[in-house]
Image (cartoon, rainbow, N blue to C red; front, side, top):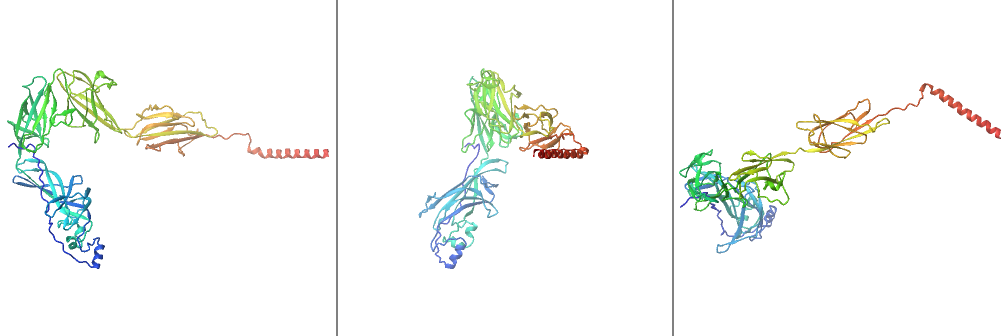
Length: 604
């Protein structure tokens, strides 16, 4: 009998024993007892069994499961989480002991339990009918956890599924929910009273597997195209820890941290190679690129559009797992293997990549109606190259990437071809070669920017409102500059800031304002009016000054400059002659009045 490549068996173990033959013990209850019962939240049964619902099934785990392989039994740590998949089912029993599926309950989801014991707990919330003491509803809860063990001989067994299961009911003696067992436990156990809380029960599991620790696998090589019956191809295997398997005479003898000749196995075109004595597990098989051939299919590929250079086989029966690799012999054409690399982000988009003939592009951009020779979606930072399922005639091609941008970041994309930097995103396909293309996307966070407005007002009877007042603006702070900053006067056409040593000079007249756009938030911005303090009285934002310095924020970056110039008008009157002028004025007024008086007498 052939051994397993990857031994994965699920064995459900251990349900809690259920007693279904308990008899009802009629019990009379006094009015005083009923009042006490009601106070504690119990519902009186009125002398007969009662039924209702409860709100949770809380399962508890001791923190380990038993895994038995052959004669060895090992306790393996295991934990339950709210993200595990829990299966809840129910049944009732007929009088003859047969089970009847029961679906009149609701399971709403898993949350962390209250931890009524020192063990880990998970609470499965819902609405669960209790049934009655003599006609119970039995609930079955199961969850599958995968564990790994190391046997005494050093053999590592990984991804062993252990089914943990428990069967219980609300009336089961194994239910130790405090809300049920505290107070009036006897009445509860006889089925007369229900306190609507839940079920708290332990859950456990055990794995029993055959003592098979070694297996076999086969690699098969298929070649299409020109006759290549004698061509030989090399492969190597890695375990889940990344170690390389060493073979002698096609039999496993150990592992190596580095890829050496001992780790390589050879398969002839059209033939299969069986490798033996391999520890049970899951392995990555990689084909070493052979000149003049391109991989067109590897069993286990993820897409019809392209294939990967590895295959992972998992078997749960007696067959030898076979890894099928198919190659095409190149003839007057080129093959392509490609992958995507990204830098500076925690997570990356998976962009669409297309390859066009250069003749169908202008400055690297496909012309309208151009058809790509290949299109696919690449996973960023995958360790594996993707082999295109198309071959290319010799010539020049352009790689075009889309959907790679990330908001808030500047993107730079480069291409290397056979480990050398390409000219832009262009490469030449050479007959009978397999070219290695690596697309690298580098993301640089865009600086957060803001706007700033400086306004100018001229006041006073001698203020020159036509004068152009000069200002000097400056930016400081590590890494900050006026690069990419623009400015406009009174909302006019924007212009780039042509700064010298991070300083920029501009002018404003009365009523004008300048707005800077794209200033980096966090930088220190200062502005100084280039004016002699004796010419004008100058205020900035209401305070006497000719300059202002602020740390740029997202908003509220406005600055107001006000210049004022006043002069007292000379009317030619001196204070030391003023009394005499007043006396002459009084005499003049008196003379006028006297003349009028005499004139009036003459008229009479």
